[in-house]
Length: 496
Image 1 (tube, helix red, strand yellow):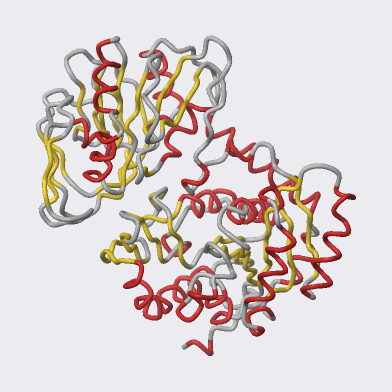
Image 2 (cartoon, rainbow, N blue to C red):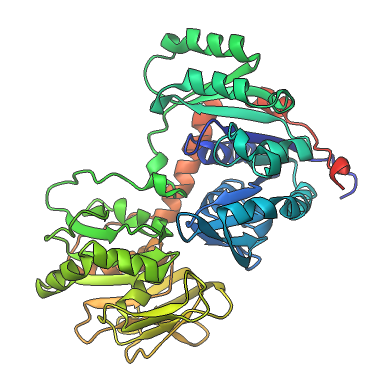
């Protein structure tokens, strides 16, 4: 192991959020892995309520789990050592190397950052010891100079670890020339010197029409152009991490069975429903505050939440509690996942103020269970089957709290134990298991329950195929040999 050449590293930063950084890292991870390199993804600091359970018993952002999959390795807490999970407009749960260390408001977190840099570099070192290439993803915008002093997510990390940066701009949202040139204008010259080139992402149309634009950016920044990457049409087939990625509600094929997902403000793990969206016989709509639950929905899903009591209040404020009862009177089905399961019960208590101010509220009263938030966070992969029909499943738990009182558990867990609850009619159910509908067997079971046509669609195989296509897409529009040459061995000695 000591004779193995030191790992190279390259950082992908963006001019803003949702410019395609996560997808580009996944693309490069799969492409370089197919070339025989040992690749590891890394994101120093992430903010997302879409998280994944890791093989080492922690949690990281969903994007890093997808990138690990693209690299053909199990996800590790070290791939995303600092994860922020927003619970309000100004505060978030802080997860360090996979474990919750507390809650912090935005201003308080700024003072925590310098102390967290040690954990970030420790995780980076650990991955470097087992890799040929580390692909680092930045967070938000590289031009947030107001937050630069304590930064550990973008240039602060790049400078600390001496990792070269590729800056990505999104032409699809407009203003890409100004965003790239403007970044060079506002950032510190020493930070700008870390940038070895730029990529213009999500291009549509004739590339020749933007040749002058690429030249203009090069002239004004002094950075070399590393790629004009066309829009990847199959991006929607991969799990999204950011709530900005929640899909628009598009018209489905005639005859499709409608499934409504309640998109309350702190929705979490909304990628649970990606497999349903890809079924040809379903029309999955995300219902936002201010919109009514569609009267023709066959199934209404209450998804996970990072702040269950607050989101339950938002649900009631939107009038969805009234809509749900009307939906049930029409013979519809309801499914709650994690926080949504807790909302369906009689009562929710948060005596320690884990997700907000201490307190308790009445739930929707649709399931005969009660929840108390507290204790250690449960982070575990599980398998089992439905109690009534013996339909098998695999998934994972990610929650704080215990729910009791279920006279009719929904699921039997392998190795013993029960999870969830179902009412006497069989039309109202809830459980803690995320990823339930990604299991083809369980998804077909639920589609059968609501009278929707199911297919032989293999969700996991579809992700693998899409990652391969994504790698081929990036190889066509970026010079991977040139990019690898720009990566360099990081020097962390100056930070010790």
